[in-house]
Image (cartoon, rainbow, N blue to C red; front, side, top):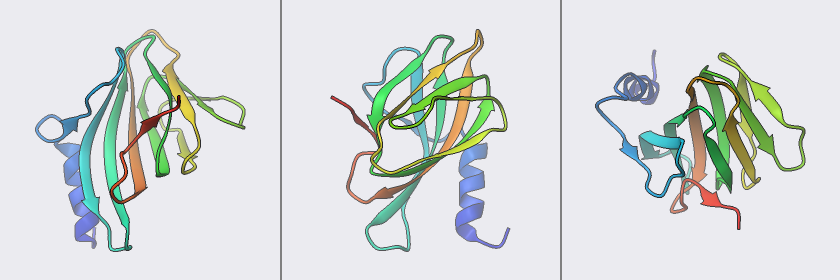
Length: 133
């Protein structure tokens, strides 16, 4: 690994138990733990990496992000419903990009917990996620 930033991202993921903040006001059965959140070299942008966990039956209600979300399913099975697209059922090893500003929701489809590693490229000064009203 040549990039110090990439090394930092890998380290942040490896230390999920010791580092990271849990976002407040999360629905029952769903959690988003921020592993890394820092400014990027691109003006007005910052990046974040989060570990997203769904308990069985857990749902992340419809929300959107002020930037793209790149997700990778670590465990379990999840359904991602993105406005204007067919629902996608994902399993471990599957990936997906959610476009900036597009409302979406996620839900655990299986009887076991589900985990997703998400990387966000966001507008600086904006919240990581905003609920759809």
